[in-house]
Image (cartoon, rainbow, N blue to C red):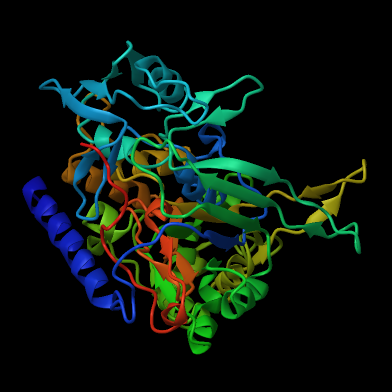
Length: 516
């Protein structure tokens, strides 16, 4: 397939997603036309803890996704994307690169100050990016400019800098960080034992106040109050009775939320649920075993029944909206083929004296249910898969038996499909298929590399999950960046008789004034 054809398919895919989102967006029924300043937005999240330090985030981490959303309140990036996917100036007003796309130059915006009053310089950008950039990229800079150098062509550098952990921050004494963003951390209360029960932790609490001196203009909200670690059902109740304006909803509760007439927004699929074979059990080295398990998995039932149509069966490692070619991969269930492969295996492999032990990431009920379904599907092909048991070691600490299978969640945090695929390959401890001297951002090369990773069946994609958010009816101008970050600086709260009627409006633009 020609690379131009893949680029055309990617463009068609992106256009279809944009058009679909416009069709699904509710009309601003009863919405006030003029935004108002003031008020506190109350947010409740499932996650119990988070970090606003980008240096601590791990690629693909689901936990880091919530951290990134809130970090966008405090920090800015060099470049951003608008709702049409076009690059816009952020802390950099201009950028250019040489013909090979190995050397990039960025002009830093003048007149910007960190929240502690310190002027932003190129040296601050250098200090922030150097520990975050991947191997092969180096940064240098002066007072008003920054240069990023790459060992290979990096045509997708803007996609990388506009997403993920590439925020600009300034480290203070004591390792605290300050930013140039629309909000400032006003209070951070860690989780603490409950007075009634010392084994139960009270939720952590974060408060943000508006940055009056933000270079992009003051946000509409006066403050944002974030509660962490509240149970999911309590969050839904708080949204219903007006004690919260924004909550995250797990896929298994989306139907319940809609039945109770809550307004639910969903993103493009941003999380991959997949199985990874590890070498802790020698049997996983047999390609027939890996293929047999792959052929036994009923992804359609997992998505449509187990998760009530709130997930999408996954055949590839990258979603369609990111790669543009995911539809070219197929991974249908073939139980008869799985049984044939199982018959070729020794009797004591994955069904005889030793079962294939599966370690499940502890990220909620969804993963537990999915792990149980994997075991049921495997049993239909005469394979034995069970959750990895725990034993107590001599020191009295819990120790896991070696597991050959790992059910994990991977959150896409980059707008660059090449960078995302590279991070996934490193998670699999696999060597990239593309020579580092070539521009592997080319869709044809990316397709070939992803296909090679899938053909080994060291990783079995299962499902793609969107993000679900419950939004109160008085929340106006809710919008999301192409990388999934919430644009809370543009949100405002409606008050008065019309605030509780109709749907919350989803309005593009209409936010703070950003200077060119």
